[in-house]
Length: 219
Picture 1 (cartoon, helix red, strand yellow):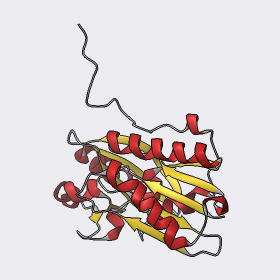
Picture 2: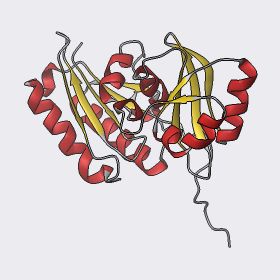
Picture 3: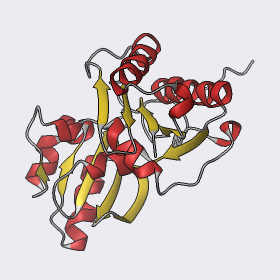
C-alpha cells in the first residue's frame, strides 16, 4: 500500500511516504521549533517529491491522533482531513503512543509523551500488543505502576527525557538523550495504518485524554 503518514503530537512535525515496495521517505523537523502550521505541509510536499509518487498513486493517508500537544494535534489532524477530502483518499487514525512504542527496540516498551502540567501520556506495549491503555499520570505514578507489575520496560519519548531523573531513580531504563527513539516517526504511523480501518474525515478526532489547559471564560 502506498501511504502518506504524518504526526504532530509533539513539538516536531513528521511526514513520510511508505511505498508498496517497502521504500520510505521520511521528513522530520527540528523538535524544538514548535512550528507545525509552518512546517508540516512543506514536510509533506518534500516526502511526496522524494517518493516520486503522484497523489493519485497513494491509497491512504494516516495521521497520529495523539495523545499529545493540543495545538499540534489540531493542526496535524486538520491537515490530514483536508488532504483526504481533497484527494478522496482513505484516512486512517493511528495512536501516536503506539507509533512511539514501535521505535523502542526492547520489550516491554514504555512510550512517554510530555503532557505538560507535570504529567505524562503513557501506555505500555509488549510485542506490539497494548498492555496498558493510554492514560495521563505523574512520573511518580508511572514509576509506581511499573514497580507494582515487576516489569522492566525501556522508556522513550520527550516525556522520558524530561523526567529521566524520576524514572531512572525508580529503576526504569530510558533511551539516551539524542536517540531517535524519542521522536514519533511518521514511518511508524504509516506502518501501523495497515492494521487500522479507515474512517470518514469528520470522524477522525484528536485523542486528548484530558481537558485542555485553556477553558472558556464564563460571565
